[in-house]
Image 1 (tube, rainbow, N blue to C red):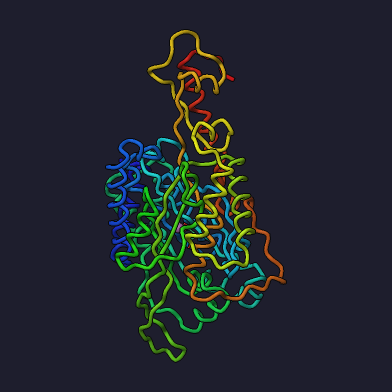
Image 2 (image 1 turned 60 degrees about the vertical axis):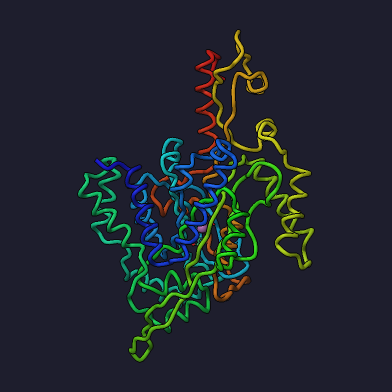
Length: 461
Ligand code: OOG
Ligand code: NI
């Protein structure tokens, strides 16, 4: 039996091999990320593995895919469900982006601690909201609906195998091989000609809408390795002749623990694609829709930590509004704000309930009866804390990633009516619970505390 964990790890490897043949610069990015990771490990020793074993980090990827309809998203949920990946979090990029990104998104990922440690593969998944009048007029919505309704992204056999795997907890070797082959193929770039005029019509509204609804198939938009020192990677990619976008998104580089998520990317290379002209001729041209991205993951923050992050980001924006600053200057201003307002030690992050940690009983604890409260247990050397890594995404960075990758701004009519499409609607489409990331981190923390109380013979709280 090939279980969900093994299917997920194998799928991540196959997608990585496939994407490397389609986008060679991705292989360079992975090589440089691994080179940097080896150096950080040599320099920091065990400290480098505080947010995940080197085995986990080396294999760690996130992908991004985009689909057009609720029916397609529901099928994606079944395919990922087979691999132990469940929808977590709700992101509304329609609001976050200043240019035209008419999608709502979630991330499919493992949710429990052991599964995350085994392989945390996650896929940021976006769905077009075609009923949103800020982007699509009624006539275009209708034609787009017809186009999307007529295409088939996933063969029925793939969906059958997915359902079987989810119901039975895995697949036998032969079925697993077939599932993985079909699943990987579903995300390859198609060689089918693209209708020039249809693609162009959608592109005038939104380059993202054209990428999703202008073609009859879907594809991996990017696959992102994890690096332990993103600033070192950034410099080294430039030395290798790959031009990154001008900044690293997310928290600044500062002299304190890594929190949340820092990401950077390079612009898509133009890829040769076939186009069908209105007169029926098929010609070769190119499209620039995919790109490379890399990320450094830090500690997951609590709602209070997140509020602080959002507040500092808004303050930084306000302080720099209207000024021409370089990415370095922006980082320096951000780092200064952080130094003044964010606690610099893990113990303070625990004490202020700003970030998530798990707790464990220390072998070298003092003798005698253990105190009942966590702060005293930590201070007295009974219990140690380990940070929980952030497994999710940041809407503002996601919007930045979408934007850095658009060939045109598109047209968003801010005066027209949006379409309500909140987390409940998304959960309804998925046909399964939409997990709240904070609840997942909190339950991992709570489970560790229950183990600590049990081991120390303390009453449960
Ligand atoms: C997804 C963009 C978001 C991230 O890492 O924040 C994303 C997309 O371009 O489809 O991948
Ligand atoms: Ni990404």
